[in-house]
Length: 218
Length: 245
Image (tube, rainbow over all chains, first blue to last red; front, side, top):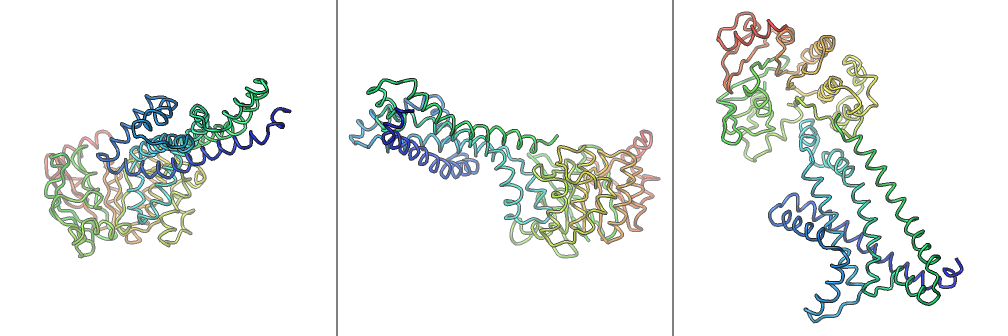
């Protein structure tokens, strides 16, 4: 604990960078991902298939490789230099957009339109059907998966340390290289992720259990 | 009157409904009979404009609602004056039975005070706080019927409404549907249950039976049709049903 307190300014700065990275990836991923998912479900040819191809590609290539590739060979090939923070934000956002879009597209493609038809023959308007039937049903289906994927995005911010982004893990490494107290330092990092990620995972688990039960027909 | 004239319908190039003319009067019952695959459910979907006819027209009280000048507009204007209870019910799984039953009626400003009485008559009053997956198939079917009745449609199309009901609950349905017909709603009922059909037909003088075979009307007539069918197909159908009863 002494170490953490002694280097609290460095850790706070690292934590701030981690939070910024995650927040950017979350915001871009959720906004653009949900929109892309809707477009992919509606326009299969020019959005659905490209999304699926990108999703398969990103599933096959580890995020760390994508990050490295975007930071070194891509920028060298384009003869540009972008700050590591922007590179990491862009890569994590792209990954999150694809993940969220795929979750959304799958839910929309699997949605039983009969529920909407039943609403409309009951006299509900298109807006009422969207508000009372479609959004709640689709929301219940996607919320647990999206929440769980956001935890993974937060954890993936650690990779940014490998391209010299001064985020929490990078700061921990640097402090450790000075004081060599790996047990204390990395335990503190583990506790941080435990405190933030475990409740999110538990919430996703509980939502999935509750919603899957209430959405099953039998 | 709900009138479908010269309706045809096809899916993937296969003609399912062929030049069918069918009408339902307000406060009367029309029974749609026929073997499985004869096109009964497709006819319900076509007449209610869920699936737009390939050709033919649909009129509601003399006003042509299909074809209309704007595609799809006719459908919007006949719902929920014409509504349908599907074979698979399609209760919304995230809502309790109470919410399922009350939501459409309350959104349309229809009176819902009768809801508890209606649910009691249908034997589902004690289940209203449960979700659809927490009740039996028969109970879901009756909840779907309650949802449709509370909207107060002028024409109610019922697809195999007794398919998941035991004799006790068939009797309950008959009582409820009698009130619906007395209140002026026209019923178009797909049913394989000859006893149920006969009882329904007795609810109104102007009731009739339409027998479909391979997508075409083979026979149509009053309740006497069930006693003495004229066509071979309908006679065999009624005899089979009697032997099974």
